[in-house]
Amino acid sequence: MGSNSPLDSWALDREIVLSRVIAAPRELVFKVWTDPQHLPIWFGPEGFKVETHEIDVRVGGQWRFVFVGPDGTRYDNRMVFLKIEPPHLLEMNHGADKDDDPNQFRTIVTFDEQSNGKTVVTLRQLHPTKAHRDGGIGFGAVELGYQTLDKLARHVDALKG
Image 1 (cartoon, rainbow, N blue to C red):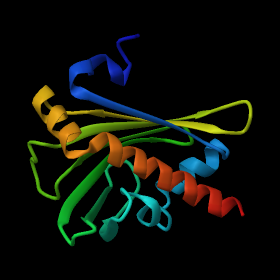
Image 2 (cartoon, rainbow, N blue to C red):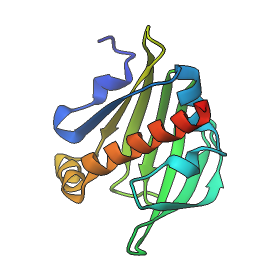
Image 3 (cartoon, rainbow, N blue to C red):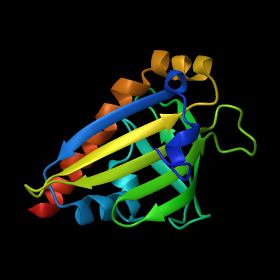
Image 4 (cartoon, rainbow, N blue to C red):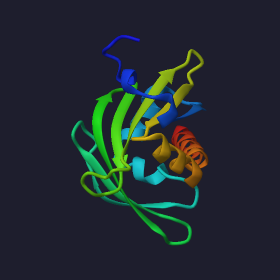
């Protein structure tokens, strides 16, 4: 990997990688991930609702929102968009809705177009430490992440008609 790659600074013991094939063209999948009208509808695990306070999907913009869990627990979130390269790459910092969150992690999402018209979405999280990554896994980050990707796939499928 060249020195310009964003993955050069990644460490395997601090990352979580999830991937899902979505039966839709890359442009549509990317649009649904970046369109403020669609993102709050599908984003998040099963049973969670999203309350958006601010959404500005552009480099330097942020999405401030609350996940409301099935039991009513509220989780404040903030994503700051660092890179947006349609239709193949998103990079953002994700953490609690506060400045200097020590648990904030970096997320890179790639959208790889397949010859059969499908898209492989890969979500790669880099946590500040191995302990933070392990804590996320213990909380259910892998299962909840796959639920989120499943909701994305269902939302895209519904748009295709």
